[in-house]
Length: 269
Ligand code: ADP
Ligand code: MG
Image (cartoon, rainbow, N blue to C red; front, side):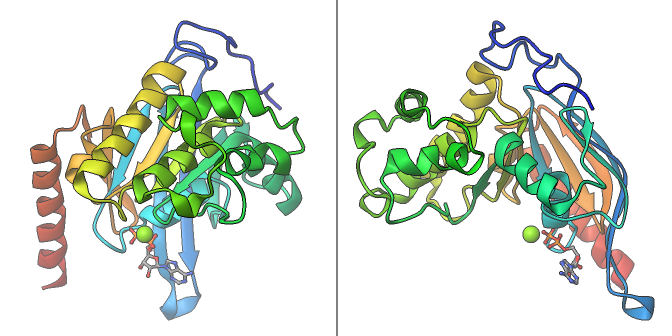
Protein backbone atom coordinates (compact mmCIF):
# COMPACT_ATOMS: atom_id res chain seq x y z
CA UNK A 1 0.00 0.00 0.00
CA UNK A 2 1.35 3.43 -0.90
CA UNK A 3 1.92 5.80 2.03
CA UNK A 4 -0.67 8.50 2.06
CA UNK A 5 1.35 11.63 2.60
CA UNK A 6 4.46 10.95 0.55
CA UNK A 7 4.09 14.42 -0.95
CA UNK A 8 5.48 17.47 0.83
CA UNK A 9 3.31 18.73 3.68
CA UNK A 10 4.14 22.37 3.16
CA UNK A 11 4.99 22.96 -0.48
CA UNK A 12 4.63 26.33 -2.21
CA UNK A 13 0.95 25.68 -2.92
CA UNK A 14 -0.03 24.83 0.64
CA UNK A 15 -0.34 21.63 2.61
CA UNK A 16 -0.68 19.43 -0.46
CA UNK A 17 2.60 20.48 -2.07
CA UNK A 18 3.10 21.72 -5.62
CA UNK A 19 0.34 21.16 -8.14
CA UNK A 20 0.58 18.11 -10.31
CA UNK A 21 3.29 16.41 -8.26
CA UNK A 22 3.16 13.19 -6.29
CA UNK A 23 1.27 11.10 -8.87
CA UNK A 24 -2.42 10.89 -9.53
CA UNK A 25 -5.01 11.97 -6.99
CA UNK A 26 -7.45 9.65 -8.70
CA UNK A 27 -7.16 7.09 -11.44
CA UNK A 28 -9.79 4.94 -13.12
CA UNK A 29 -8.78 1.95 -15.24
CA UNK A 30 -11.35 0.28 -17.48
CA UNK A 31 -14.13 1.05 -15.00
CA UNK A 32 -17.47 -0.49 -15.90
CA UNK A 33 -20.68 -0.32 -13.92
CA UNK A 34 -23.79 -2.17 -15.02
CA UNK A 35 -27.16 -2.43 -13.38
CA UNK A 36 -29.49 -5.39 -13.76
CA UNK A 37 -29.05 -8.56 -15.81
CA UNK A 38 -29.75 -10.04 -19.20
CA UNK A 39 -31.89 -8.01 -21.58
CA UNK A 40 -32.54 -5.50 -18.82
CA UNK A 41 -28.88 -4.63 -18.26
CA UNK A 42 -28.10 -0.92 -18.15
CA UNK A 43 -24.46 -0.08 -18.86
CA UNK A 44 -24.03 3.12 -16.85
CA UNK A 45 -20.23 3.14 -17.35
CA UNK A 46 -18.69 1.27 -20.28
CA UNK A 47 -14.97 1.29 -19.55
CA UNK A 48 -13.66 4.61 -18.23
CA UNK A 49 -9.92 5.33 -18.23
CA UNK A 50 -9.03 8.62 -16.58
CA UNK A 51 -6.15 10.08 -14.55
CA UNK A 52 -6.55 13.27 -12.52
CA UNK A 53 -3.46 14.87 -10.99
CA UNK A 54 -3.13 16.39 -7.54
CA UNK A 55 -4.00 20.07 -7.42
CA UNK A 56 -6.29 19.98 -10.44
CA UNK A 57 -9.90 21.07 -10.93
CA UNK A 58 -11.90 18.87 -13.31
CA UNK A 59 -15.46 19.33 -14.51
CA UNK A 60 -17.34 16.16 -15.52
CA UNK A 61 -20.07 16.95 -18.01
CA UNK A 62 -22.59 15.11 -20.12
CA UNK A 63 -26.27 14.81 -20.92
CA UNK A 64 -28.71 13.46 -18.36
CA UNK A 65 -28.25 9.69 -18.01
CA UNK A 66 -24.71 9.75 -19.44
CA UNK A 67 -23.24 8.27 -16.23
CA UNK A 68 -21.97 11.34 -14.35
CA UNK A 69 -23.36 10.38 -10.97
CA UNK A 70 -22.29 6.76 -11.38
CA UNK A 71 -18.80 7.98 -12.30
CA UNK A 72 -18.62 10.16 -9.20
CA UNK A 73 -19.87 7.39 -6.92
CA UNK A 74 -17.42 4.83 -8.29
CA UNK A 75 -14.52 7.31 -8.14
CA UNK A 76 -15.38 8.26 -4.55
CA UNK A 77 -15.76 4.71 -3.27
CA UNK A 78 -19.50 5.14 -2.67
CA UNK A 79 -20.32 2.53 -5.31
CA UNK A 80 -18.37 -0.49 -6.58
CA UNK A 81 -17.58 -0.86 -10.26
CA UNK A 82 -18.74 -4.08 -11.92
CA UNK A 83 -15.18 -4.39 -13.24
CA UNK A 84 -12.05 -2.28 -13.52
CA UNK A 85 -9.94 -0.49 -10.93
CA UNK A 86 -10.08 2.79 -9.02
CA UNK A 87 -6.99 4.25 -7.32
CA UNK A 88 -7.21 7.04 -4.76
CA UNK A 89 -3.97 8.76 -3.82
CA UNK A 90 -2.09 5.85 -5.40
CA UNK A 91 -3.94 3.17 -3.45
CA UNK A 92 -6.35 0.80 -5.14
CA UNK A 93 -9.74 1.09 -3.50
CA UNK A 94 -11.58 -1.45 -5.65
CA UNK A 95 -11.78 -4.67 -3.68
CA UNK A 96 -11.61 -3.02 -0.25
CA UNK A 97 -14.12 -4.22 2.32
CA UNK A 98 -17.09 -1.99 3.11
CA UNK A 99 -15.51 -1.15 6.49
CA UNK A 100 -12.20 -0.11 4.94
CA UNK A 101 -14.04 1.93 2.33
CA UNK A 102 -16.00 3.77 5.01
CA UNK A 103 -12.80 4.65 6.85
CA UNK A 104 -11.18 5.77 3.62
CA UNK A 105 -14.14 7.93 2.57
CA UNK A 106 -14.17 9.66 5.95
CA UNK A 107 -10.54 10.68 5.88
CA UNK A 108 -9.48 10.88 2.25
CA UNK A 109 -12.49 12.10 0.31
CA UNK A 110 -14.51 15.30 0.71
CA UNK A 111 -18.03 15.76 -0.58
CA UNK A 112 -20.01 18.81 -1.61
CA UNK A 113 -23.64 18.20 -2.58
CA UNK A 114 -26.22 20.28 -4.37
CA UNK A 115 -28.36 20.30 -1.20
CA UNK A 116 -25.48 21.28 1.19
CA UNK A 117 -26.31 18.39 3.62
CA UNK A 118 -25.36 20.27 6.79
CA UNK A 119 -26.65 19.09 10.16
CA UNK A 120 -29.16 21.75 11.26
CA UNK A 121 -28.77 21.17 14.99
CA UNK A 122 -24.99 21.68 14.99
CA UNK A 123 -23.22 25.04 14.86
CA UNK A 124 -21.33 25.95 11.70
CA UNK A 125 -17.94 25.18 13.25
CA UNK A 126 -19.18 21.81 14.56
CA UNK A 127 -20.45 20.96 11.08
CA UNK A 128 -16.98 21.70 9.71
CA UNK A 129 -15.39 19.53 12.43
CA UNK A 130 -17.74 16.58 11.84
CA UNK A 131 -15.57 14.69 9.30
CA UNK A 132 -12.64 14.75 11.76
CA UNK A 133 -14.87 13.38 14.52
CA UNK A 134 -16.20 10.65 12.23
CA UNK A 135 -12.66 9.78 11.19
CA UNK A 136 -11.65 9.53 14.86
CA UNK A 137 -9.14 12.35 14.47
CA UNK A 138 -8.54 15.25 16.86
CA UNK A 139 -11.22 17.90 16.26
CA UNK A 140 -8.87 20.75 15.34
CA UNK A 141 -11.06 23.75 16.12
CA UNK A 142 -8.33 26.21 15.18
CA UNK A 143 -8.10 24.73 11.70
CA UNK A 144 -11.89 24.75 11.34
CA UNK A 145 -12.01 28.45 12.26
CA UNK A 146 -9.16 29.16 9.85
CA UNK A 147 -11.02 27.39 7.02
CA UNK A 148 -14.21 29.28 7.87
CA UNK A 149 -12.25 32.53 7.64
CA UNK A 150 -10.87 31.43 4.26
CA UNK A 151 -14.38 30.84 2.92
CA UNK A 152 -15.46 34.25 4.26
CA UNK A 153 -17.47 33.00 7.23
CA UNK A 154 -15.12 33.78 10.11
CA UNK A 155 -17.88 35.71 11.90
CA UNK A 156 -20.48 32.95 11.58
CA UNK A 157 -18.80 30.02 13.34
CA UNK A 158 -21.31 29.73 16.17
CA UNK A 159 -24.45 30.18 14.08
CA UNK A 160 -26.73 27.36 12.96
CA UNK A 161 -26.87 26.50 9.23
CA UNK A 162 -30.52 27.61 9.11
CA UNK A 163 -29.42 31.16 9.94
CA UNK A 164 -27.26 31.33 6.79
CA UNK A 165 -28.10 31.91 3.13
CA UNK A 166 -27.79 29.08 0.60
CA UNK A 167 -24.47 30.37 -0.67
CA UNK A 168 -23.12 30.67 2.86
CA UNK A 169 -24.27 27.11 3.65
CA UNK A 170 -22.43 25.84 0.59
CA UNK A 171 -19.30 27.66 1.79
CA UNK A 172 -19.63 25.80 5.09
CA UNK A 173 -19.94 22.55 3.13
CA UNK A 174 -16.74 23.39 1.24
CA UNK A 175 -14.88 24.10 4.50
CA UNK A 176 -16.20 20.79 5.82
CA UNK A 177 -15.03 18.98 2.68
CA UNK A 178 -11.50 20.40 3.10
CA UNK A 179 -11.02 19.82 6.84
CA UNK A 180 -9.44 16.36 6.52
CA UNK A 181 -7.09 17.47 3.70
CA UNK A 182 -8.67 14.85 1.44
CA UNK A 183 -7.04 13.44 -1.67
CA UNK A 184 -10.06 14.58 -3.68
CA UNK A 185 -13.11 16.77 -3.13
CA UNK A 186 -16.07 15.49 -5.13
CA UNK A 187 -18.81 18.00 -5.89
CA UNK A 188 -22.10 16.89 -7.50
CA UNK A 189 -23.87 19.92 -9.05
CA UNK A 190 -22.62 22.14 -6.18
CA UNK A 191 -24.26 25.24 -7.62
CA UNK A 192 -27.52 23.60 -8.73
CA UNK A 193 -29.50 25.21 -5.91
CA UNK A 194 -27.88 28.67 -6.07
CA UNK A 195 -28.59 31.86 -8.01
CA UNK A 196 -26.04 32.92 -10.62
CA UNK A 197 -24.09 35.41 -8.55
CA UNK A 198 -23.90 33.13 -5.51
CA UNK A 199 -22.95 30.24 -7.78
CA UNK A 200 -20.00 32.28 -9.08
CA UNK A 201 -18.83 32.96 -5.54
CA UNK A 202 -18.96 29.26 -4.66
CA UNK A 203 -17.15 28.29 -7.89
CA UNK A 204 -14.51 30.94 -7.21
CA UNK A 205 -14.04 29.40 -3.79
CA UNK A 206 -13.53 25.90 -5.22
CA UNK A 207 -11.09 27.43 -7.70
CA UNK A 208 -9.10 29.09 -4.92
CA UNK A 209 -9.12 25.89 -2.83
CA UNK A 210 -7.25 24.35 -5.78
CA UNK A 211 -4.98 27.34 -6.42
CA UNK A 212 -4.08 28.39 -2.88
CA UNK A 213 -4.59 25.22 -0.82
CA UNK A 214 -3.57 22.69 -3.46
CA UNK A 215 -6.86 20.81 -3.18
CA UNK A 216 -8.02 18.47 -5.96
CA UNK A 217 -11.62 19.00 -7.08
CA UNK A 218 -13.81 16.85 -9.32
CA UNK A 219 -17.13 18.54 -10.06
CA UNK A 220 -20.12 17.12 -11.89
CA UNK A 221 -22.13 19.86 -13.58
CA UNK A 222 -24.24 20.49 -16.62
CA UNK A 223 -23.57 24.24 -16.49
CA UNK A 224 -20.98 25.40 -19.06
CA UNK A 225 -20.19 28.49 -16.97
CA UNK A 226 -19.51 26.34 -13.92
CA UNK A 227 -17.25 24.13 -16.03
CA UNK A 228 -15.25 27.17 -17.14
CA UNK A 229 -13.88 27.50 -13.59
CA UNK A 230 -12.16 24.12 -14.02
CA UNK A 231 -8.75 23.36 -15.59
CA UNK A 232 -10.27 20.66 -17.72
CA UNK A 233 -13.72 19.52 -18.76
CA UNK A 234 -14.25 15.83 -19.55
CA UNK A 235 -17.39 14.74 -21.36
CA UNK A 236 -19.41 11.58 -20.84
CA UNK A 237 -21.92 10.21 -23.33
CA UNK A 238 -23.74 6.89 -22.85
CA UNK A 239 -21.30 5.79 -20.17
CA UNK A 240 -18.13 6.43 -22.18
CA UNK A 241 -15.67 9.31 -22.33
CA UNK A 242 -16.51 11.48 -25.30
CA UNK A 243 -13.62 13.91 -25.39
CA UNK A 244 -12.34 16.70 -23.20
CA UNK A 245 -11.50 20.39 -23.28
CA UNK A 246 -8.45 21.86 -21.57
CA UNK A 247 -9.00 25.38 -20.16
CA UNK A 248 -12.72 25.21 -21.00
CA UNK A 249 -14.57 28.42 -21.78
CA UNK A 250 -18.38 28.57 -21.51
CA UNK A 251 -18.99 28.84 -25.25
CA UNK A 252 -16.86 25.89 -26.33
CA UNK A 253 -18.31 23.76 -23.52
CA UNK A 254 -21.85 24.69 -24.58
CA UNK A 255 -21.01 23.87 -28.22
CA UNK A 256 -19.63 20.47 -27.20
CA UNK A 257 -22.75 19.71 -25.17
CA UNK A 258 -24.95 20.52 -28.16
CA UNK A 259 -22.83 18.22 -30.34
CA UNK A 260 -23.20 15.36 -27.84
CA UNK A 261 -26.96 15.87 -27.54
CA UNK A 262 -27.38 16.03 -31.32
CA UNK A 263 -25.30 12.89 -31.82
CA UNK A 264 -27.52 11.09 -29.33
CA UNK A 265 -30.69 12.24 -31.03
CA UNK A 266 -29.24 11.06 -34.34
CA UNK A 267 -28.42 7.65 -32.84
CA UNK A 268 -31.94 7.32 -31.47
CA UNK A 269 -33.64 8.27 -34.76
P1 ADP B 1 -26.27 11.11 -14.94
O1 ADP B 1 -25.82 11.43 -13.55
O2 ADP B 1 -25.31 11.54 -15.99
O3 ADP B 1 -27.64 11.63 -15.20
P2 ADP B 1 -26.43 8.37 -13.97
O4 ADP B 1 -25.04 7.98 -13.58
O5 ADP B 1 -27.34 8.78 -12.87
O6 ADP B 1 -26.35 9.51 -15.09
O7 ADP B 1 -27.11 7.15 -14.76
C1 ADP B 1 -26.50 6.52 -15.88
C2 ADP B 1 -27.41 5.39 -16.37
O8 ADP B 1 -27.50 4.38 -15.38
C3 ADP B 1 -28.82 5.85 -16.65
O9 ADP B 1 -29.31 5.13 -17.74
C4 ADP B 1 -29.56 5.47 -15.39
O10 ADP B 1 -30.93 5.24 -15.65
C5 ADP B 1 -28.84 4.20 -14.99
N1 ADP B 1 -28.86 3.97 -13.54
C6 ADP B 1 -28.29 4.77 -12.59
N2 ADP B 1 -28.46 4.26 -11.37
C7 ADP B 1 -29.18 3.11 -11.54
C8 ADP B 1 -29.68 2.09 -10.64
N3 ADP B 1 -29.48 2.17 -9.33
N4 ADP B 1 -30.36 1.07 -11.19
C9 ADP B 1 -30.56 0.98 -12.51
N5 ADP B 1 -30.11 1.88 -13.41
C10 ADP B 1 -29.43 2.93 -12.93
MG1 MG C 1 -26.73 12.56 -12.02
